[in-house]
Length: 268
Image (cartoon, rainbow, N blue to C red; front, side):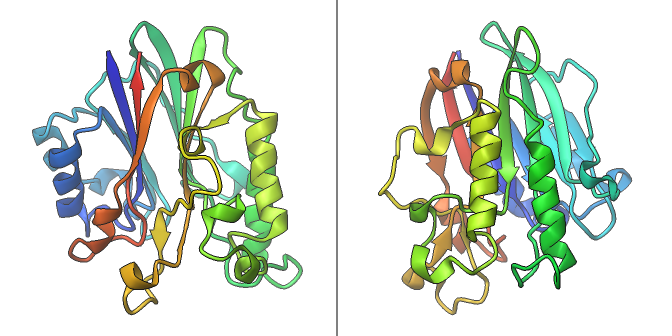
């Protein structure tokens, strides 16, 4: 069977639900993980998703900030896990278990803190929070549960490789690509036994971006992007990866998010 998992920082799900519907109608992933939903659970717009066949919806939201949601055409077979990373009450993590192709799979949906503008935790608490969050993610292992494969997706707000940004040299002191962040995220991945699926079939030096700033007058012409959105998996699922699509066209839609959807396709 085929399986497709999409991730997208939507930057307000209620504001951009028409774009979510447009994406689902065209691309039809089996599961879509959203970040920065900015929506409390009791106000999440489930009805349009259910009309499109996404009847299984789990969310971890809060008013005005953060928030993650996982919407699925496949049944979600276990209780949802919502971890409070750093113990500050932010809605930044959600995990579910589903079955596909004879496998049980735990799917983690993350929204890592952006970290503010100044890459110095002594003067910028937001940057310290980000570093602590990433450090806590090091406890997460792709093979933590016997008999269960793993996928980790989300807006991790770090572009870890030199070819994940438009200019490695110019962004070395810019939050999202500083060495302390990139080394931390790579440590989460390697220490946890995760495989970077986006780079499996598109290794460096190929440039990959999933985010383009709102500040650019012409984002497409400038093309000063960063790869802030990621899809990782346990090693067994990496063998089943068919391809990864970055839906760059979504950045040009009406009132878009500054992030675009990323979709991993598997043959199970």
